[in-house]
Image (cartoon, rainbow, N blue to C red; front, side, top):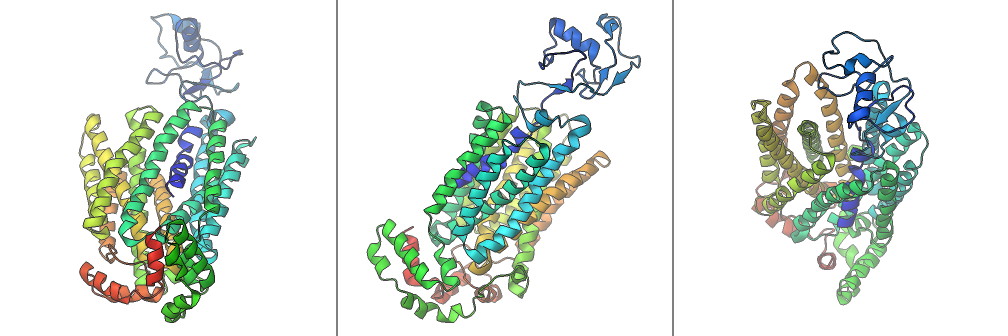
Length: 539
């Protein structure tokens, strides 16, 4: 299941390249060529100088041009101090193609007076993620992991491919909404299905392979976008390749845990026997029978709801506490990590290198996080990362602006620790919720993170008026969220639970890890019967 993570990262971060804003200036009057004059050498440089006013940095203004050529500016003794007559870019713009051959910005001239339309594309993307997190999470708990995974991956392939050929920006924005909704739905469903087929001792290893797949996808995308610099071909190639996941999902078995929790015992037995046969455990698979399973789980099935609802996340005291803490953690982590990513834009590194650096930064952090989760536990690891990232941002506030290298190092540390917190949350959230509402709980967490991203982008507008305020809030938010993490119980070494009632019982017990493990082993002849566990261990 690592291949979907690679392609998910490619599709998720593609907007940095398909929606990039290249340098641009007004098209010069009577200019017949679309070639930019950014080189400013020889005759081209003179023509640019007399036709386009310069900003304070000595670069051509992006949204203004002189009403008529100012030939006197070629005289070295003449400056542009006098207020010369200017006008808007009545004949359109010319774009620098040294970084991007084309983007949606150059396609539909989303600059100057139309630049807010580009923000619309980002809003539609975030709105799609919010909708997909909620809708597909509920549908997955109701109709099954495999079914929703197939639907969402097919939807990503179709809508993403169509977005590469649309003639208007409005159609592009609508398709991006649908693609984002399906993309986040496919990702959280894939993560849930993977966890439910993974035995306890391999959860951290499988989670590490998933999060490393995202980093590998970012590196792959940087090379992909460098070779394919036309936005339509880049959009088309990444979308078509996502069809690989659809073909792959057709061969995947449905979650046996989901089938059992929904009283589909015959299908669960067939699925477990198929998995046992694939893994060379055919004899073990033959021992499984619906009657055998029923004898172990009859009492537990009576507590399983046939249909899950959103209110189940807040209806009982234990689940409600978990949900409130999870929402707080996902929201605050999303808020702070997005704020740090906004600060990276000031370092002036080529976008392809930035993409690679972001991925490389995550590699050692995620390795350390995986080790820490295995030996120190999920809760301790998460609390440490949240507090550490908060203090790193606080230190950055007091570093002078001209110390660029130190500020970049601090930004890298902050971003890395928050990325580690997200990888920890990815596993921790799935382990905390029972099977009957696990996908819904993960969806709420993803929704909270996306909401945090939106609030962060809006809140950073206040930086124009109070420069220090966004940094202070971004620093305090993760530190406060660590308090929420302290109210959660440790899941390291514990079996996954199937029902809300089982989770309520676990929440009420003393929260020492050893006590939890010993009691959990004793109570576990519930839905995780011995025969099923043997088949899962062979996966």
